[in-house]
Image (tube, rainbow, N blue to C red; front, side, top):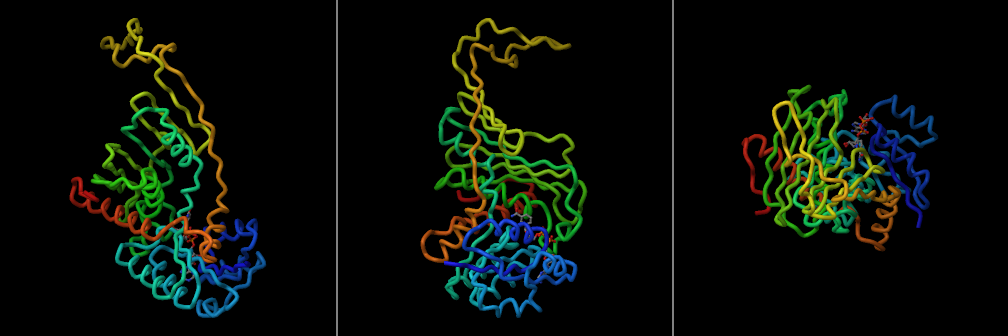
Length: 349
Ligand code: NAD
């Protein structure tokens, strides 16, 4: 079955979808509408149909799907209008700004019988899939801590992402990806508490980063951190288990594991520092550990749209479910609440 997608907004991300969709069988772009003439001109240059206005887009019977790729505050009204016009809708992340908005969008999907899902594309990131593989393989023994970070040094991009009324800030921008990934790691396990603080290094109006300590009911503690003033970046992932550690420094291909292979540490050479000796913090002897490389897990992001089409045709369940989106939204609200309170907040206790 052939599907046609109307792009609501033709900014950076809609352009990315347009280029991707050229490589997906069964899906084409029907046209686009953007409030800015310069973006409409670019769409025309790319050979796209540009609608006269939003109503013209909604009225196109050829487009059975719509993507909402505007600033975050507009996802709710535009997605609901598109569903009411009969389109199946994909919203860019974050799905919207708060749980109340998401309830209204979910209700519109139920009322109209249209599919509604969210582009949580970073579930296809190869670093994330590699960490899932490492956890599933059990090679680290019982895991007790996971750290997931993204560190940039350019502040917040200089547009609507700096403004609260448009849903700016890094919790809603990158946080939504990392928190969604965190909740995907342990299906069925409750997240009992959240302790978070936001940063305002370059922006007072919205957060330009945050750190959140998540306590899972299975005993795993997880740190999720986003920074935009980190001129030296820490590893993307760091995982500690009873028998080993894993690290992914960058975005995928560089996963490494170090595992204990014996307890024989009697004659370890101490580290000498200016102020004394330490055996406790001395590195393991090479014969008592083993370094292992981890094959990178390959993914194909085209699966996102292939799944959307299969879900519309009733062949598959949507890969990004609305109850999952609602849980991530509640978690982002808990991050804000913990920052305001200056203390941990209960989540699914
Ligand atoms: P952008 O500023 O480049 O594009 C937004 C576009 O929406 C602009 O061209 C703007 O003119 C247009 N617009 C504003 N109001 C409109 C309206 N009422 N009707 C039609 N068009 C309108 O921003 P972006 O980076 O493309 O981000 C868009 C969305 O995509 C955001 O929700 C963002 O969080 C998301 N995004 C997702 C990812 C990802 O990896 N999933 C990456 C980047 C952005």
